[in-house]
Amino acid sequence: MKPEKRYHELADFFHQVFPCFKVQKISINAGFTCPNRDGTKGWGGCTYCNNQTFSPDYCQPTESVSEQLERGIRFFARKYPAMRYLAYFQAYTNTYDTPERLIRLYEEALAYPGVEGLIVGTRPDCMPDALLAYFEALSRKCFVLIEYGVESTLDRTLERINRGHTAAESEEAIRRTAARGIYTGAHLILGLPGESRADMLHHAEVMSRLPLTTLKLHQLQLIRHTRMAKEYATSPEDFHFFTVDEYIDLAIDFIERLPRRIVVERFVSQSPKDLLIQPDWGLKNYAFTAKVDQRLAERDTYQGRLFVAHN
Image (cartoon, rainbow, N blue to C red; front, side):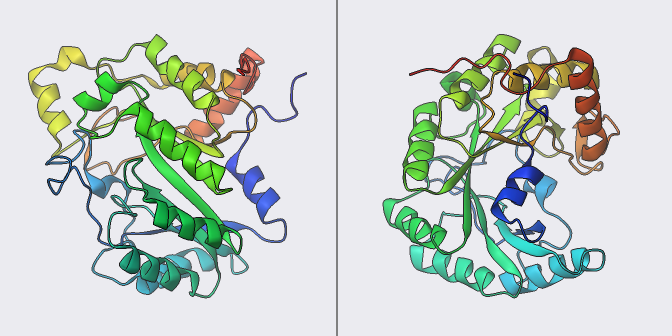
């Protein structure tokens, strides 16, 4: 039977968790690094990564967690004074430090007025059991979502983009986290070099078998000052950048294969124009999402239409 809504939106999920008020994520850059930047796993980071692309102006590592929250909340509270907030530890790997320092920063965020919980972005190979136990205990008192950068379910792709972890490590981290009753998210990039359309739809089948709460998708973006930009300059034939219509149809084909229980948090990402090489669609995220909604209606389809449950 066709559901009332064509996909499971983040706003609906938040309304279920927080029925009495609206919540807004406030991004925080706590000054962390990554194990494939500092030599533990590798050097230079992922080939596509320029961390400036997802750090809002109010999110500066020179400011404390509380200062960043204050600036972010001041920005949103002008329009929505009754809003509550989730501290989103976003930049780099936010579980990659000593447990003592990490917990101190998380607790600083939770102590800020109006903050209802945490979202912590990290890598699948950076979640020690001791920290997971902390998040488990914390999740009984407030909202906690751990968001893993999976990026691809293919080891050959992960090696090519210098991720420094395997697909098996991603699956293990997701299962370990969800097994403790913690909301668990994943992030995928569609269009990585060397991946076919069939490979990308295979990602959906793999994700559908995992105990995920949320899933973020976004198109491959070529960003200035990255190793991938240098690769593209020498071997452009290895890359395909989607048109808007191509990507909309791919995203819909993807979510058709996802179960309804998974929240589709995002379809696209929007990098700063001065850093973006391509594709430059000239669309805000909300405008792109409106096009997805329109195409879903035109195709008369919905999330989960092609999902097949596996034992």
